[in-house]
Length: 274
Image (tube, rainbow, N blue to C red; front, side, top):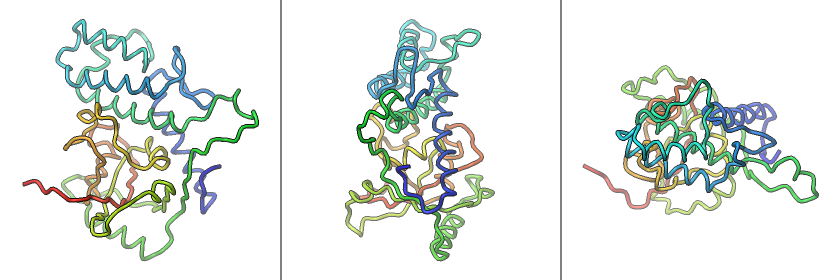
């Protein structure tokens, strides 16, 4: 209700993105989604808990070869108190984070959860108390209909979809105009420093990005989340490179559907490595 849509048909898209966000978390953990909040048996998931989980995840990433030893297992116990797993037929320590790849996938879950906690509504018993509803989104969205703009983006996509990345079969289905009003309003730059890039992300993160824009994750996740040159916000002039981050090449779960943002990056003074 807070998102301004140019076309009612986009409501189905928003529901799909919201469902995907929740499904990623509830399918990967035993966290439940009730009355608009994420909960564990120990209570509601908070940012403080997620930050603590990130620190532990950084430990697992750096100490994966110590899997099965007492300190590693104790930290798994601590982690599962924050981000629990379904017990099923028994949960073995060595199967929770068996390798670096499993830690990277868990980092994706924490990213989705951190964004979703921001989006989550208050519990039902606090709704209708006469207080004004908090403004979560300040977003305007519509389908792009300008043929010149459609051609420009499509031509750029086709010309930078490199065969080496094996995504030449992936085609553009729809192009949307997204205005994250406050985020764009605060974008300051020197026009000479602007670079247009692609940014790819998994479907479960798209709604969160449309709320907050792109931002740097906490430093403890820098080594985990596939950040090749350290912590920061990443984009590429090559569409197929960014497709890897939305279709699963770079560590996320595989997907048949991808999402790319076309972004203006204010890059400041560039450094060109040799």
